[in-house]
Image 1 (cartoon, rainbow, N blue to C red):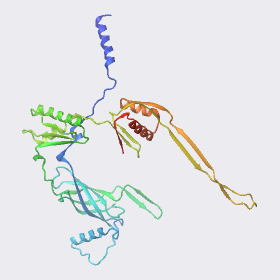
Image 2 (cartoon, rainbow, N blue to C red):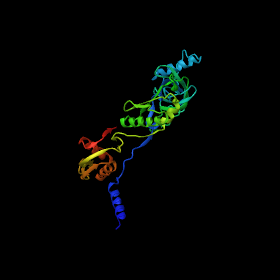
Image 3 (cartoon, rainbow, N blue to C red):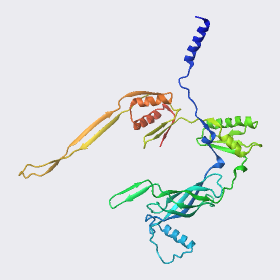
Image 4 (cartoon, one colour):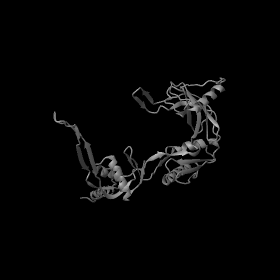
Length: 373
């Protein structure tokens, strides 16, 4: 064999030995998808109002006196006297109106509002929200809401039965509020950009700062970003840069994100979510369930004819015992696929896997955070 052929064979054999089985690829995401602008956050608004036009499903004015007071005050503001009489109307309901004022909202723009019953109203379906002012945490009015309430649930009842689907005492008014006042701060007045990670992590924070500095070095000649902690990254505005254009360029940069190893368990629904970085040391697991079923089947014993006996009840009890899942398996999770295969090899249901994961964590064999919901 020629020396060149031997060299090729040696290179092929070496490549087979050092080739990785399955490389771990980090998730790449845009900065806008993993971080938010601190000055671009929402502001919560709240208000108290009345929903009218209900079909007999409003508040009982005796049980909800504030509804009667609010209705009288509204009529008086409209120039209608309410002295002397007592109303028994069932088509009015007192509600709390909530909304989120988006960042940089200008006067005249519309936002959605959520309407929730405050009294004993049974349904808000078909009602109309009367003009309601929405205030912020500072007590200032930022929006005014009014419009038809959209309720997704329904209920129907008769004398002996009733049916209900969804929630009928809460609804939405799409584009029901008009912004009347803008926020005092302006985006252009800021001297820097503060980015906040939605999932705080030091590794991801430093990667974002390095990615922004690499972009700034090519466009502005120097670094402009600094990671303060696991959540905040401060980006200084260069002198020659436009702040809006700078934010548009920064939020589209791609960063390799990182996240801690975590296992999330919801015992109510039986949902198990295992992160990609979860590792489990070699451990032996045995899972078994014991089911005991007791069935009572009493029998009525009748006396013979003309025997003057009495009818008696003879008890009869059947007990059934079943034991399942007595196998012992070795679970070794150097990666996510091996861990899932090891858990499936035991052949238990999700509730059993939840108990096994909790036991592995208690034994100190799981290198991950266990979150119970």
